[in-house]
Image 1 (cartoon, rainbow, N blue to C red):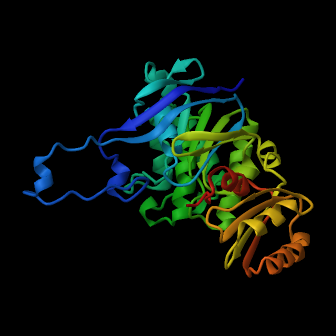
Image 2: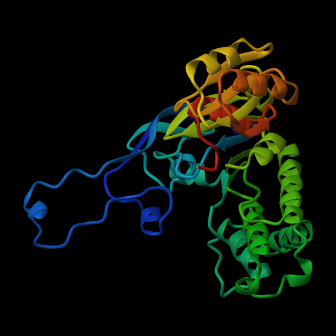
Image 3: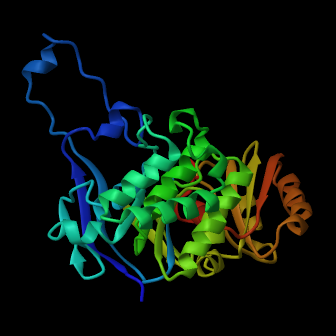
Length: 345
């Protein structure tokens, strides 16, 4: 039987810049003024960034669960809390029956973690990376030798097994990182942006390995802003933005919740209210949004067949249609509906 995960009212507030800020990731900050400035004499404003804002989630035993959202949404912070790398400000998280921050050692024995950026020891070969990891978890010499060989073959790394990992490509580093995380056969596998920057062939290989590991009854949690990855791998997922869960369910349920399904993103030289009113009255249109009376998002039960009616409506209103983009029902259109921006923003 697999191991589930439970998150209760989780909140994380950074009162100092997190490490990623120094590398330009996730958050942005105002530059400090030079010493001796007038503002320095004033009371400094308290630093505060809310990375997680009271989220609650349940990830069922034996499922692939995805956290989907743009960079800086709170996905990696959530993984950090669950893997004991980031202490929460409040709330609780459980791996199986163990409170992650009260029973860290017991929780850690159940999990394998693949971080967003490779943290391999570049002084080791691929084989040594796996053997040493097995030793950390108390595997016998025979057991870790057998497991290492199996994983090297599974990840197509046998021919490079005795090469230093510092000479590996990004895709090969990602493969050995995932193999290392699986070396001690964890019940829960965390993958933080597992296919970011990988070529299509390597991505498909990783997807198949994830599915195969899940078929063994393992629980897998992955973060991604790749809609195809979430749609292909996840049994259920939560879409997160600005540290809050904005929607959750199966990929099919989430896509079916979009009004009308199709999204037509239109751009006019101008979009007066009378034009928007006509667009709302077109057959099959369920919703029309326009924030600036230039661009308009039209949700409808069809795509291309509406274009001629839209052009006619624009001409009647004395407006000119400059651009049309049609998106079929997808997780991207769901995110656009909730937030008005792209998952990759």
